[in-house]
Length: 195
Image (cartoon, rainbow, N blue to C red):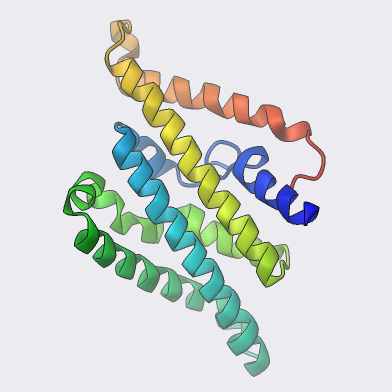
């Protein structure tokens, strides 16, 4: 049980996929202007991560390995990710039209979001069991959502702050992202962190 807790904490904080591994930067910078949109993107991405992780684990271990078709694992992973994102996009459009419009182009871009494929490949490379894989995936999704929310809150405050002209908009956002990354990298010394 403690091992799974370390996996979760390692994926969410110590080895955060956005601020430490630098995966998923496109939605991190693109959807973090408002807290509501950031939360919606974080939840949608976490759902996609969980479904694709479970699906890819099942396809790889129960279909490709027994049939000796492990060379097709990357192709199957990409197909599973694309199908999952399309289903999620349809569900978000049906459940909340406002959220669907707020996320805009970034929702279908979850398909090409490197955090999704990176997580699936990392789960395979680390040879996690199903339980370890799901805990690690939930930790990664939680960390992604946490970072989006923190960054969105900071950007909302920066929008009403008196920022010097050369640092407005993208410049101050990138400086803030760098400082957040340094803060999260401060957790790197904790023992028991995953990967």
